[in-house]
Image 1: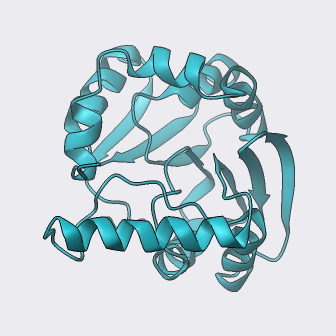
Image 2: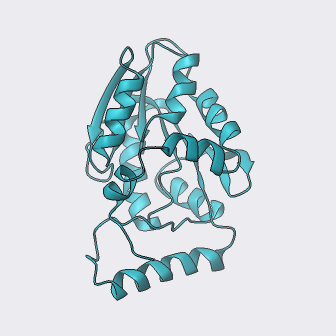
Length: 216
């Protein structure tokens, strides 16, 4: 398979993206509303959405809490434009860029969420991100992560090996972000979250390869 840069991959698949996610990803019709229901329902809260895409989780969340303010970060300008059209009457600040590079601030968000976005990165990359995220949450803040996870440590190792083999074989930039699934196991994801400072991490739901974690 030919690897594509992350932003180009999603921009090329914008048409039909929502339908694909909702009909082709097992459990999506359950895990999107489940994720939204875990986010704060108090008035005027601030929520950070990592890899917000077209805002599928936000459709459910705004139906529960229309007063929330959301900062959404995504690499794809086209997806952010689609999200903006969906929620023109909501309080949303959209940032086109990598959530690894964007500054989150400190003690700023009541909650953060990410759905089907973080399964492309190493434990080391996630540790830096999660430490930054931990600092950006209020004392009572928390992180809801719904993502695709590897079924075993052997599978996890294979995904990372295969990505490096493909990048090397195609002469690609070693540090650029390319679209290829490299999920951690749930156990390894929880280890990284705890190492980043989240003391309480719980599995809130599971749909085959997808699980929802709540990290406080």
